[in-house]
Image (cartoon, rainbow, N blue to C red; front, side, top):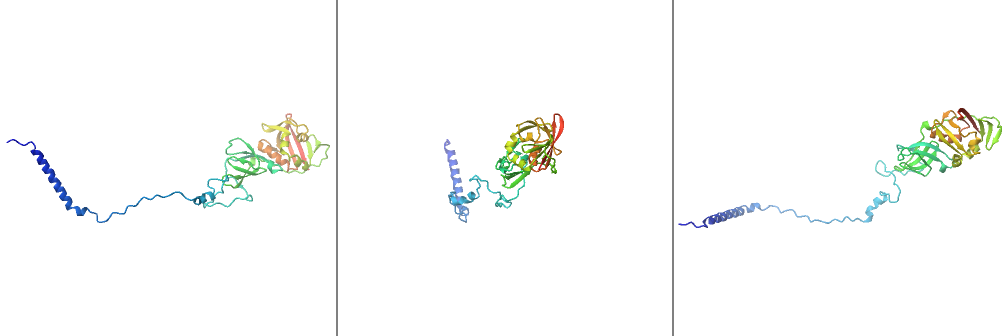
Amino acid sequence: MARQPLGSAYIYALLALTGYIVADLTILSYRDQLIPEKAPPPRVSRQTFSYVQPRDFYNTITSKNMFNLDGKIPPALGGDGRSAEPMTDDSPPVPTSISGLQLIGTLVHSNPDKSVASVKTPSGGEAVAAFRRGDNMPGAGEVLGIERGRVIFRNSMNRRKEFFELPQDGRINLGLAAPTTKAASRVDGEVQVISETERTIKRDDVTRLTSNLPDLLQQARAVKDGDCFRVLDMMPGSIYERLGIKRGDCIRSVNGEPVDSPQKAMELYNTLKNSNSISLGVERNGRPETLNFSIQ
């Protein structure tokens, strides 16, 4: 008897149907155990938050001037994070905390606004710049005052009054000697000429002559020549000429103190207003000379 060609297909179909029935009966048997005993937690709906705040919310920022809106630097914060006490002009200055700030010399004028300080600033490298009261020193702050051998300024970082001074090796320590009482042989303007190397001048005339610093500096020109300062030129009839200083003189010392740096040369100007007697050591025509000045 011939085998029907579709007989094997019936067998596979019967096996598939049987498997489906067994799986369905298994699911029905364990259905109750698959159902969760507790209801799932409620689903939280997504909410949209608004980040737009009223302007009053930012009053703290504007009141503290955090972004320097008015162009003024706010006061420094204290150690507890609160604003420090405001710094007043009556507060005494303290030594500066800025490194690299060096005072080269000061020229103190009777008018404080005309006093000049030569300073090396931290941002200026080896360059020396001149500053007056009210000027801003880069990397330091505003100059408040210039005294003999000292500069007072407002630190731009912490707003404190600070100062820095001329190094001790740049100062001239001149003793005050008693004035001479020799009679003058002749009078040359404000100067009484006693001899070729001796002069007498009144203190009131010294104060008047040194009150106009720009004019005083323009009356003569000197440059550093080795360990002294050589006078290259001077105006005819200038105070330098009346004091007996000549073209070509090389100024070496004052009251025995060497004048071998710009700092000490600038200190000489301040000393003239306080000393009663000054001995100026010069080299003239290759020979040492001493010029004596008595201020009465």
